[in-house]
Image (tube, rainbow, N blue to C red; front, side):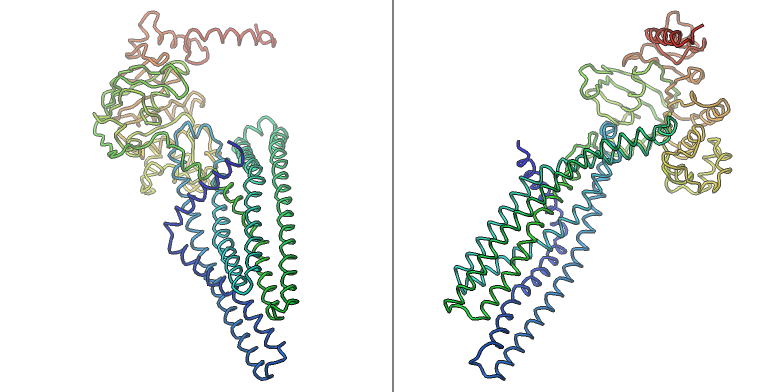
Length: 619
């Protein structure tokens, strides 16, 4: 498909999307259109009375007093039409303000609603900054589209049709000349906008999105930039993106300038033709001085609207291009959606059953889990261990229903989670991730995110249980202290304790802990382990373990290997199993080797030693 065809489809889709929302706001649309129509009609009739005024004051055959009264009547009608013009435009502006703000608010809310519910994969593959640019650019494009269609295009088309009709009723050739010239001009303007300027505009918009993503990426990771002294490197990286954007945008603007020059040239030809024909009518005696004034005044109004209509078409094309990415969001599948008739999940005990679960990530041919079956009793504390990529994190993601299964079912207290609403499922599962992410809000708001209606006393109680109250009390504003974007003002251990406090406040029957003490100091680790033990009491708990010392006291340990459970049992049972995978992992950590890995990864350890020897670090 050619770029021109793609852009025509994009404009069609965007306008269909916009008109569908107009239908929901039809009183505002109708009121605005009617007000503009009244104002336009008044504008259209002004030349008629201008001609009568000229005839009254210039006619040598009419008595002086009669001519004066005729002139006054023309002036009064012009004043009335002027008042209608002002009132109509004022009411239209009030209507467009109401309509546009409602649409902008709805579009932003709808886009945000969908983005919040897109799959984890979608969020992993899209820059937050780029997504924000799509929405904000699309919102403001709605403002431009509404103004263009209702305040500019509608009156322009009414004036063109009305002027052609009024002129044609008196001089058919003149009416045909104006109508034909206007139709040719509009057709060429539309063709230039959609086939000439729009393809370049689409490319510049895509680079604008990339630029927003690059800026947000660098700002979000500013701590890493500073730690490597890489400010100049990031400046250069952004400069490359900005250079591409500048080149594409300059080309778009140049094409727009050429298009505008061609349109003005067409208008110049039409103006000369209309003026010459009006003079010809006067020379033949077919028109009075007032008639010529009427023709020229009418054409000057038409000329003004025609001159602007080229810009209106360009604005409409621009707004369609800028809304395109936002509109595309509405057509994307959510990835994981609630089934029709999904019910609230009711959890009493918290028994978890994986029944012959088969799952593979998109694009992979081999399933990670193939008919995996497992039962976790209500109140049981289970540890998940295994090397990276063995399936531990995927197990938890499937339990949260971040992905749908290819086969099988996951049951909680006998209820299929796929048949439950996602919101009710996740309200029953408190998650403490390895790297907690906090909102740039107060400590109290971050803790209360688990239960928005919680009072300060409940928040403080949760903080006490998570061993977080002491460090929070030392903050400048206590629980009202802002934590910075993603919690950057807090240490890793402090963020973990806030996440634990959030889980305590949630008070869910099931708990998932992505064990996160491996990168903390011993004091923070002790505080978090103590809080974690409190948190697990009386709940079904799943612990993803990186340090095997954290799972020694759990009821059961599952050893994952490439998507299947290689071993299971208590710590004592697994350590006593000769040649077992868990025993091997435990011994490696006991000897101080890096990380809980399987034996084949010893090759990487050897390579690391060889690299150290080459750097002079070997013994």
